[in-house]
Each structure stands twice: as C-alpha cells, then as structure tokens.
Figure (tube, rainbow, N blue to C red):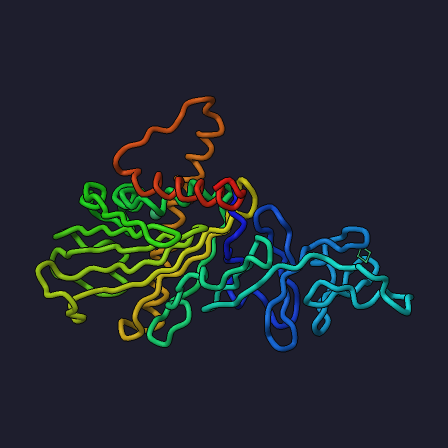
Length: 340
Ligand code: FES
Ligand SMILES: [Fe+2]
C-alpha cells in the first residue's frame, strides 16, 4: 500500500546535477529529474510520450530534456517544445510532471494530485542544512518493502541486539519502554536509559570515563520520515552540560521504490563544535556500519517472510509504536481513497 498525498524524498540535492539527468523510481513510477538554468529541480515521468522511450537515456539541454530516441524536447512543465522536422508542435504533446520542492538539501516529490500538494507537510529536516550542524549524507538501497524498514525504525529495542557492537552496547535499551505520543501526521517516541556503557560508535565523538545516561527522542512522520534528537551524558551530570555530553540530530527518510524495494536517505549530524572532519567521518562510518547491520537483518527477515507460508507475525508490547504507525497509514490511505 502506498500513500500518494505525501512528499517523498527522491534525492539528496547534490544528486541532481546542474548538467545531466537523474533517473529514479518512486512508488513504482519512473521519474527523470534535472535542473533548469535557474537551479530549480524538475521531475518528469521518465517515459517519452512519442514511443515511450525513457527520457533519462536522452540529454539535458538548458531548461529541457531531449529524448535520446527521436529527439523530442520537453520543458520543465513536461510540454513538448520541439519535434525535429516539424515547424510546430502538435497540441497536447506532453509528459506528466510532478511537484518538486528542494528543502534543506532533500529533493521532495509529491506523488498525489498536484493541486493537493501541501508544503506544510514538508518535514523539518533542519540539520541537513544548518551552519551549526555537520554530517556526511548517506543513502542505502533495500530490496525490501518499506514497511519492514519503518517497523525497524519504530522500535529501538533492536539496538541492543542488531547493533550490540555499534549503536547499542547495552540490553537496557531493549528493556526500556518508550513513551509514544500521537502528533500531527505521526508519532513522537521517547526512550531513555540510565547508567549504561557508552555505545561503541560514540568513540568517534568523545571518551566517557564512566557509564552514561542516553536518550532517543524522535518524530516519525508520514510517509516514513524520522527526525531524531539523541545523545548521552555522563551518568549524574547535569542536563545541558555540553562539556559532558554528546548530542546528535538525525534525519532519515524511506521512499518506496517499488512494492518490494526502498530508497533510504539518512544522515546523523553532530554539532559543529563537537569535532572536525575526522569526527564527522568517524560518526558516518559508525552509522553506516550499523545501518548495514539493519539491512542484513531486515533482508533476511524478508527472505523468511517470503518463504514462510501463512504464518502471521506476533505482536508484543515492544511493537506498540509500529502498530500505531501502521494504523495511521491505513487511516490515511482510507482518507485518500475517500472512504472517510
Ligand atoms: S520515443 Fe522519444 S522521441 Fe521518439
Ligand atoms: Fe537499526
């Protein structure tokens, strides 16, 4: 099930070059993206209206994309502006376009009816473009349906086991019960653990000479965007004492590519004052290692599901947030279908 009335991250800003084309599939629909000469991004259906060749096999010319098969040129509104050998363009020659917004270095595409595009629903991914925050952008491709990855992000009890040697480091995370509060178009999830060893990936940021208190507070918003404050401070140190704590902000977005594959855009940002490029790189390496751990587990889980016959999943208290989010998706799908 795909929601359509949503902004989906289709690319990092740097992936859409000023010269050239980017092909990317979202919700099973092939798109081609390019920049016009004023720098704004256009997204067109990646299928020429002539003989249906992918436009991404053509070339970028100024404010247009030219089909590489017979040379029709289309502008950023999808209108055909030139047919080689014809004086005038026959009326109605066009390809579909999609509303696009570039917002804090993420390029969002609206997959619903264009007139329903609602900029208020863009997530506040501020740390992707803020002078006080530094990160290295990340992307992973999953051969797995997006819901299984959303389930993973909605339940951090897995940190204790999947990420024992990276993000986790303590079974206390799995034993802690999160607070879950409904917010507009999503859930706010907060989990705190007291007096645990610093996780291995914090070593890139700061050495702690004793146990720490950790927190993870994040919003998980439709369609599947995670915005998180997390951190740790020496156990017993006063709140806000920046000399004894690590504070991170993370932005992550899942975009279904097809029913069984997903784009995963992510970053884990640290405050600029917390370190130099080596720290940024060390943090990125820690996070990518952990996210590969997730990908290995979730891919194996999907393999078992596909082989598994009729057996249903079980629900336990640790699944509360992911079950609530699945219900939210179902409600939103019903609203889009006009059933509510
Ligand atoms: S298929 Fe594109 S110009 Fe013919
Ligand atoms: Fe994980």
